Length: 451
Ligand code: SF4
Picture 1 (cartoon, rainbow, N blue to C red):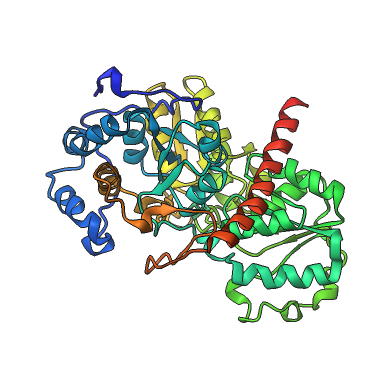
Picture 2 (picture 1 turned 180 degrees about the vertical axis):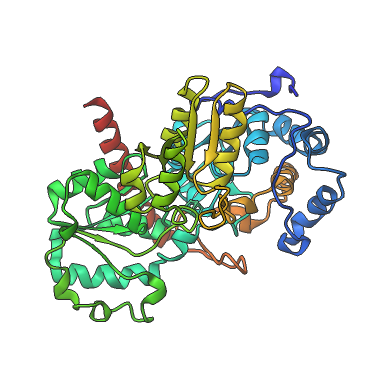
């Protein structure tokens, strides 16, 4: 279903290779009308009234809003989506010349494309905030649905993490640094910067951890317990020197280290302290899932947000980019079982089937005692076609709601949509600290690639 070539633009991120086929249903569940901001309801009403969810139906409707916006903004507009978005948004964003990538590549898009002054992101809020943190003052970043949060990040809010970091700094001083996974707010990334740590992604976490541990005696890894443990073990750090803090759901509101079993002194032998958050999408995987597919001749690849016993049994583990490339490079006749987010696997399965490669979701097992049905990232999927249509049309009209504009330091309540925004001076300080931690990650990653 081609667009006029004048509408298409290319960028440094390669095409995902996902193809739109007129009869292929797009399988995103419709959101209830009352989930939409008032400005987006007219677009949602039109979308919900469409007779089906096939590209042949959706595209003419969406073109009516997207093409005028593309013409209006010209090369100043950049559309972005994450690989975990439902297949329809991934496909639609690429159709309009946008880019689909993992969180590392998305984070770089503002700074690598200074001519893009309007950046519209269809993914979770922390990703848009990271782009905004690295953007210039001339670049405006928008998220199509500001209530698209990340459940892992929701268990690592500033009011939870900051008191624990303060207590650890009091105990260990400059011996401690914070490594913040990309799935954190700008406020947590700023803490990483202030303590001499860095940001990391699932593709570079072991490199970042190794560098920071070469400079400091211990690291607090925030927020994903599983990625932190998998990365530390990959570096050869013994389990006895890795200590997980309780899940934030189990702390009382004080976040006092006196609450943890053994008290603060019990942490003294640990080199890597793990914040106790996790991704509900990646912690459904079990060793029995790996064994099931392995016994049937499948190669098993998983994301490192999965529990360590799953990663240890699998044939390989890595970021979304690693998984996508492994599937794309698999020769015809290959059979792969993939342990990650459900929309990603569905998109990959559709594309791989065209090349004679079979892809299954690791937890999608026809055995009721084992099956967990591969689930998608429900919060990310709150960015649906009506949100994309509405965002582009409202921007073109100069009526973009303020709540959709993303600035560094913003905190959005994922249920109510209420936003807390820093004043200019505090935001400027946060940007310096968070940007320092992000730039440190980029420097470490590029050095590792050269080595
Ligand atoms: S898949 Fe998990 S970690 Fe990734 S954005 Fe969704 S909730 Fe967050």
